[in-house]
Length: 400
Picture 1 (spheres, rainbow, N blue to C red):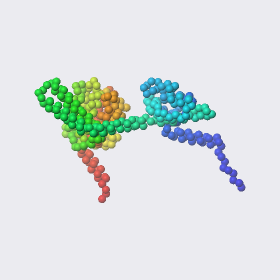
Picture 2: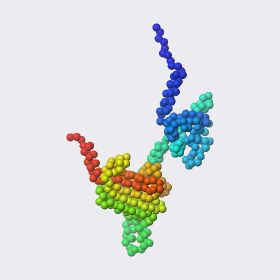
Picture 3: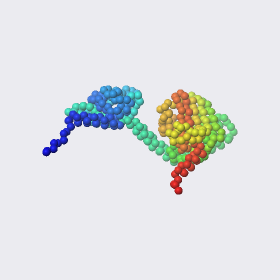
Picture 4: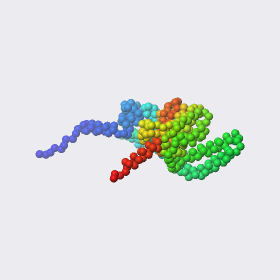
């Protein structure tokens, strides 16, 4: 008996399966995909595009003119007319595939950068619709910019490393001659100017150390030290930095347990915190520096790989303008600053975090706009570090 060929599925049934499968695939992809009609209205969108735009569902903008939904305003806040949109112009001019980077807007009013690829679909020479594939590249651009800054700072670090020795020799000569001149018969005006020269030389030397420490061309030199001695060493420079407009209060707890850290890095970290605090109080205010021993570091520091342990606390509190949440989350990132370019490099707090991490410590921040800032540095006591090192060595030793 002849065998009949297998029965083919009905075209409409097969087509239905294909559409269902295609929709599932498009819905599952992480890349934003949506379809525009020739006038730029959204005909369809997958959930990923809605997520990128900040909407719970594509239904929030399907049927709407997408330029008005996500591309309505320039970076400077001025309106962006539809007639100037490159994507729509190219689409209506009958161009082929268009790829571009654009700044778009989310539903909550925040901006982001996107890489978009517009694929027009023609039938009989007429544009039927366009498929837009979209991805959020904000983080990628941020990392690229940070990498460019890092390359610049690496060059600065190399220059600093090459000139630091000679520069410090010059500063030593300046400081030495200034000190000799200060031994002459007192003259109030002259003495004030000489103290200014001495202070400037000390600030320049500290800046050199900061550049070297951040660029990691200056090796850390951790030693067992008393945090109070670090604060006491920096006190003259602290008082000079705060000036007459800022009321300074220093409370140093006696008999602090020792910590293991680089003296100059912690001293520089303290000065960076003081400078930041003073910048936050342009009209003056109160600055408090406090040290004490704490039985256990906060659990919040586990995110910084610091497990609860006995610590020494360095606390710097100011009555300044405070920070919002967005600033707090970025304040320790290299090159992040809210100051004008001529007033800040964005390295100060990054160097603080670097120095604290080198000492196996952690940092917490409390701040709100208009309510000042409290920044706490927790450094494990030397005994705790010794115990942990011994335990780590024992766990890594081979079995006998």
